[in-house]
Length: 281
Ligand code: ATR
Image 1 (cartoon, rainbow, N blue to C red):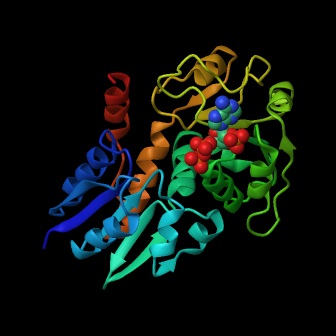
Image 2: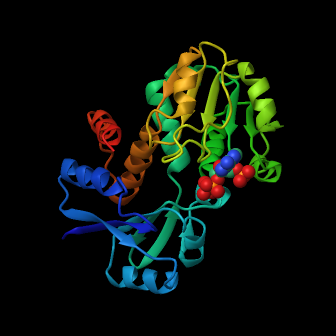
Image 3: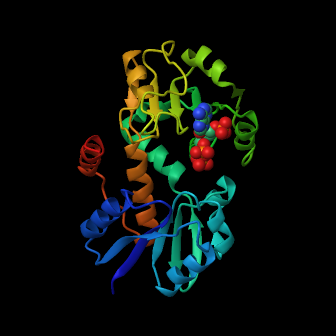
């Protein structure tokens, strides 16, 4: 039987997920397809989902603008996704739809692969810049790893505050303004940029200047278009080690595929291949 997987969102015509998952299917030796299942927000979301259900998919990813909205249409929700309040992966089994969130864990696995040393000392200081959907998953993922201090800097304080109260409060979190983040950036061992600032076409924008950061800190940007954001370029110039955004995309996909098939496909050369695709865009 052919496995039927796909992506729900809008606009998603240029998404890299079909490239990733069709390779996973091939590597796993599973016959099937991962396709785009675009639902235009001008049309009914409910009707779009009904059609998907009728087509008997085995699972699908969910992306903007539906990561929260999809929750209303699921039969069950994983605890992680419930805490984060967003779903990016749905597993369909025996007519039941169960929602998961693999974004945060994808980020954590990607980080661990590249910089295992940061996980050896859970008192390493972490700063997350931004408080949108991605920041939620990453905060929760790092918190689950046992890091004791994760600060959040955001333009709007109330959104940062909403993140800091998810789950049990066993991590210390200070809320910073963007100005404070710039001023105190040298206090952090790991800085994660999760806002949309600097994304194509606004590639010369950056959320905060980083001249003051510690030379041996690790700096992540979850934007992958462009791969070399201004934020990362500035950070590298200031002496930091750089962690590119496309790795989160690969590892959240790896984990989603595992939920659908029970198979964990090694990322190996796909990391470099995806980098080359993105650099050519
Ligand atoms: P989501 O990831 O849930 O779709 P988003 O609306 O894309 O969220 O925003 C992601 C983050 O980018 C938010 O932290 C947002 O800051 P606010 O909470 O203050 O809106 C941040 N962001 C987007 N544009 C920004 C800008 N020009 N300056 C500063 N922060 C910005």
